[in-house]
Every structure is written in structure tokens, then in C-alpha cells.
Image 1: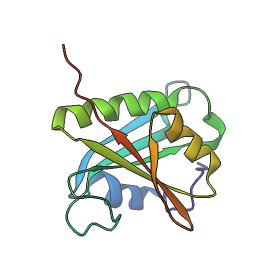
Image 2 (image 1 turned 180 degrees about the vertical axis):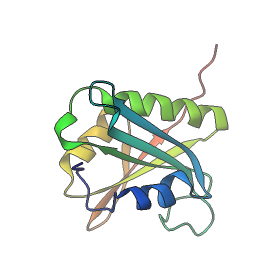
Image 3 (image 1 turned 90 degrees about the horizontal axis):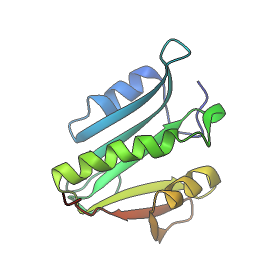
Length: 137
């Protein structure tokens, strides 16, 4: 599987860093029903703790999204975010951080499309923030 990321994404890394991580709130996976359940993408939502490795405000969510390169623009990212946002609302998060490589144009465009707004720029990354609004009803 080819991802648009320079971060490790082998199964052992994904299992330890996302699925089994102590600060993990949810990890949603998109599967292809036509290709024996091949993973098309996944999205992680963690809870930023004090002195976290992401340098994100404690209590915020920290999101990470991986979608297979050959599946872009098919609504997978939107469906992943809809599921992640529902969990963020359930647990009462106020904000979600997405920090993206400054040269990752598809990643930056994705988070813009999901409603994230830039709040910090560094030499190699852009941090975006999504303010979670609790759904009434």
C-alpha cells in the first residue's frame, strides 16, 4: 500500500503507535469490499496529554489520516472524518489538531476541505485546528 506520507505505516508501527497507544480515542479504517477488505485508509484520533510529542495543547484531539494514493477523491477521507468527528463530539473534545507536512499539498487540501483552519506555521509543517461543535438533537 502506498501512502502520501513520510511517516512509518507498516502494520507493526500502526498497531503500536495508533491502535494500541495509551492516548488513543479511536481509529477508523476504510476497507474495500471489492478487494477482500483491502485497507484503503485509516484515521486516528488521540487525546493530547501534557508534554505530548505533538506539542499540541493538552486536552485537544490529535488527528492523523492515511489514504491510499490511488483512492483519492472518492469520499473515503470524508467518511473517515465523519466517524472521527462523531467520537470527538461524544467524548467532549473542544478542538482537534492536524499537523501536516508543509510540502504535503494533498494533505493540506484535505484538512481545509474538512473545515480545519491554520493556526500555526513552522518551517516544515502547518498546524490546523478544527473546533468541535456538539450536535444537538
